[in-house]
Image (cartoon, rainbow over all chains, first blue to last red):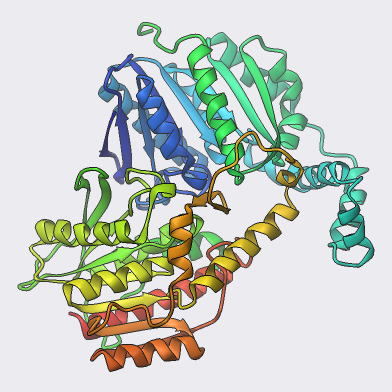
Length: 282
Length: 294
């Protein structure tokens, strides 16, 4: 495996690291920025993942979107997501030419999952998606659902700790955030905004029609799981090309080292066993 | 100021530091390379578009683990600010960190000092610089200080250096434990894998590195002159006063800039505050470099 820095040309140069395998299989993997974190990912997870994937024969490109990490901000499109989609296409062009591949896998944590999800229906080269803690929401949906999802995950945390004497002790002693407790309880019984089911169904059907295999991974402690439940669960899991994996006790950025290990194992295992992304050029 | 504008302020639009109002900014050329082998280190060299007769380079040394990730955009902003002021800058990743080879678990202070010295050779080759100064944040300041002493640097910028290693590690342990108490991870009674060493904020520090950090103190210099000119950006307390005194006794012209005590590199709370405070510190650093090193 050899790594080298590469630049992705365009209106503003994007900076990236290409991990090239010693024995290439013709497979290309793009790792997409997790929110505002630069291309090493949360807790440097993308570095370890890229090296493992490259050792397994994949060309891997992890790059910084404009305005993230080393890539200078230069908004060419009217929205952040439109910029991200344009930049992902440019990164995919570079990766395909470097790896000699026509089909790609996209992997993203948090915002990277969202970018991958919205990019996949627009580009026929995408064959596989691994979306980790992606909200998969559009900006309007995020605003509408963010508050209730945050309360849902807090509620789930309370339920898990219901039998903990230490937690009850903290509540009684006034060392807990009581206003958060009441806010969570109030929100819990409030009606959430109904999702746009038709639009969700159309998205997932497009991915199925394109033959895109999708693996969803959620940490139990991430509120994106609740947003996914509200917006997409029913439509997504009705499709034969979608699998879901929920990692108990993990938090949104996989802070615990054991959870990082499990995440990497699950990704590597799925990449090994999912239908290959090496189909001939369409 | 909204969040996006504030981020831009830190990430790439540091106002020109000169208090005398020099005409700037200069354009910046960027060149990324892996340098040295086993472990290969990732470095981004920032060069000013207009060449100077006697180029001066500044090597940036990043802090540890999560602090490194959260200060990355700040270092990118600093690199641009210093380069626009006429310096060559090398922003690089120590072994086991960022894009460089290796795992953090294998890192030691000696290894990182070697890396910083390799960074000096690299930036000299890239820039033909005749003088190399250092800037370091937190544990990066420790590396910068030792490397500067080794090559007799003309300049050294210590930003929030670790002046009490034991207290620093205790702080990391405490904030990690506080996070864990309020996290789903506290229910994982029997993790499938348990790293040897200290787990803090998503990274593992080896026992060796912990012992080395615990031993850090204000009087950590290898003796003698650390650098000709030093900027100390630190909380105003007896330890930083002692360090400033130590630096002056070693022959350095030391300037101090007091900052508030903060664990901003580990928390996302009060983000706007952090961005504005950091932007102000960046201006102080670049301004000092222009007045003292250019």
